[in-house]
Length: 81
Image (cartoon, rainbow, N blue to C red; front, side):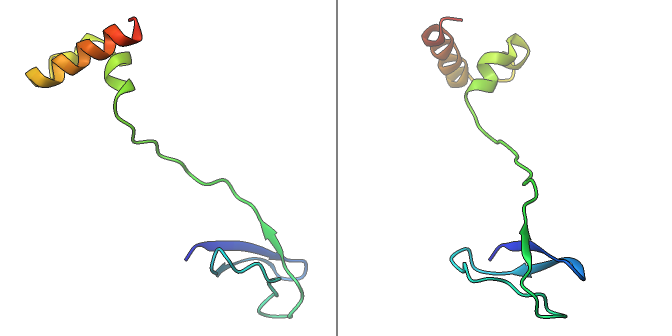
């Protein structure tokens, strides 16, 4: 389950582990007031294959297997590079 940040007007920010489907109001654990959800940026790491070898040039071409070189050249032709 994900961890969400909530902010109480009196006690500040705190974290709660809740289900994504749970949309009931969250209360502060200390004073029982309704807390407001705080949105924070999520780090994103993109691990995608394909475009990197085409865009990175010849320095990575030497590290490819013969089958990889064949795929690399076909992809370049298809992309018009």
